[in-house]
Amino acid sequence: MGAGGGDGDIFSQMFGGGGPRQAQKRQVKPQVKEVEISLADAYNGCKRDITIDRQRLCNVCNGIGGTDATAVQKCTDCRGQGMVTKMRQMGPGMYSQSTQPCDACDGAGEIINLEKRCKTCKGKKIKRDKKKIEQEIDKGCPHKEQYTISGEGDCVPDVEPGDVIVVVKVRDNKIYKRKGADLYMEKEIFLLEALTGIDFTIMHLDGRIIKINNEKGQIIKPGQKMTVEGLGMPFHKTNYKYGNLFITFKIKFPDTMTAPDCAKVADILKTNKLPSELQDIEACKETVKCREFSEADKNTQATGGKTRQPASDEEMEDEEGGGGQPGC
Image 1: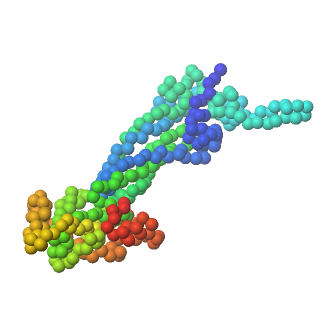
Image 2: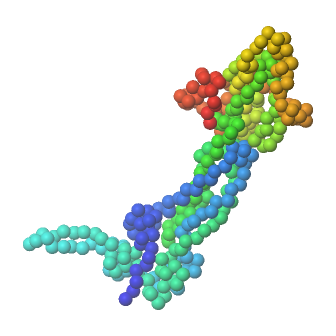
Image 3: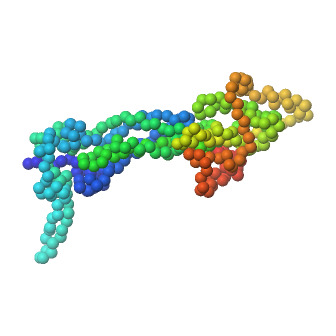
């Protein structure tokens, strides 16, 4: 007595039911793998190892299920269909017809000779397999970007192998918030700096220490947003271009002022900058200018430029609120 091949249930798992003939018309559904990266990784580009736990054709029998091709024979009961139609008498002159999986081959459509059955996969034609694949993440990669690794997913006999879809999730950054190809940050400055000019440093996502200042005599108001050109994210797919950095300023005012304090206010405010900041400013070799913010500065798309779609309610609130925490 022969034994049914074990791949009937494989097709049910992969395609939600049906025999081999139905499955041959389709590709195995893809696996989805999520990869989490930092905003700095998205800025600089990176590589990540993806471990794929998958179902592949048995490499011992090459997906035949037996030692040779003669080990597998078409089921004569269902003629290789995997399904049989049966008639049942309900009463005098009354019959019902039903289609059900073939009992002889367990719905597989074929019979495997037990003596020639593959000892590795036990006639199922497939086995579990793990593979590590390195996926390159582009510079400027947006959140939920997808990369397709063709043919490296699950397999079933006589069907196109499935793909692996890598979905990139970009973690939030404590300093910078991203919108499209632009970066947003908040900076608290002292009143003296707001009146006489800013001069501070930031560490960018690629590790550079950059000094930022403005035109002398330019007054910075509470909640004011200013633009630093070219310090945003690389444009996705055209990473030699960059978005902009938008800085929203918060002004730190003194709690109280007495008459003697008013005379000494300049000296008091000058001592508020930390020694470490002064050392960074003196040692810094790169200086950029920030200017008045303009809506034209925005690159709301990861590929650069603006979308024609209307802004969301959250973005409208950010623009109107001014001093609020910029969203991502």
